[in-house]
Length: 464
Image 1: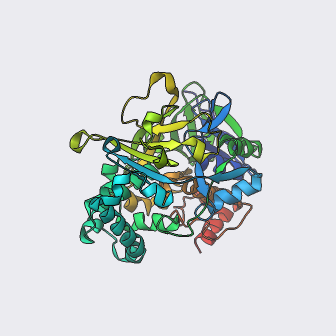
Image 2: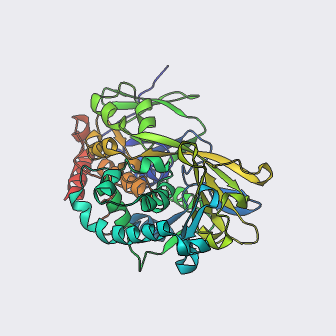
Image 3: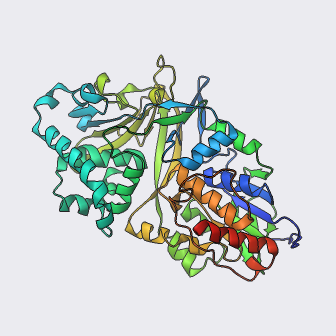
């Protein structure tokens, strides 16, 4: 393949490629383009990654990113304010329908808890509630002393019962992380508790208010793209990233490879590793520590994928069918409640349906991948920043944090600031506290120009 090097000059803006147009890539390209020549690559024809709004008979519905709250998403809140993105309140209630409706309840107060009347005389249900209250009270205090334990080990040590684990905590976490409930127990206990505490999920009162983008997440994607001067390359997937002589080549399936001063890989960790030509041992070890689960998201109107009792319906609904090894699990989002849509036509998004959705009710099917956070992944996460800038290659993504929009945004902004000598146009408390930031590994090329020296200084300032 013929690769033509680009012109590089110390007094000129850097030529930077950003690969991936999820929240990490969009934010990095947007901020970097304020000062540099940026090309944003997206293999799909659609930009936005997990920010994906589709039409259901003219009604905009999100099937990926849906909600946020201002306390736990400070940079996203600031970005929306900066871009004047319209938002509105969302109903973030939670419900469980276990074993085909054998047990059902929701978090809508007493009425929701006892939507199934026999819960009033169910000892297992009361045992779950007692453990729930104890966990919410004691877990935040224990977060500092349970490092090295998985969540399952922490629950065993605290003698928490199966009812609390199987009928509440694991289903709620599975709904939040879009992961099978069987994997939830492998999550590091300290990280799990910190996440729940930071998101206000361990508060019985004064829980944070959740919001959604009015008109769907595409509204913020469009505004962010309109505010960037980056050149867009869509529909032509990148096939390799190659470092050579202090520069980086990016090749695509259908085009001629191009040279850049730096490349930002704003993809999933495993995708970044596959794209690298001759990855280093550290890149292989740290990026390779992250596994991903593939989740099928079905937009539909089949109420059979909701709790059987209408009074138990909630914004997020965890359902299971069968028992033991044959148990099938899924999560259904009631989009009318989450996005304030007209209730005349019920709209649902179900992840990995536990039973087939009625074909005539299916509106759309998509597939999303989510990172799996176990002890190995969390250990690698603490060292990810050491990879930054090696040979002009940088990394960002939601896997730098807890896998959510704020994590991806923090990673994208932090990389843009460290690489480009630019600064986000707002200041918020804990602006990078959901990711681990360190000083990039510098190479002679990385500190060869005044602009690069300024970038390293910006990274040091961010760490302090």
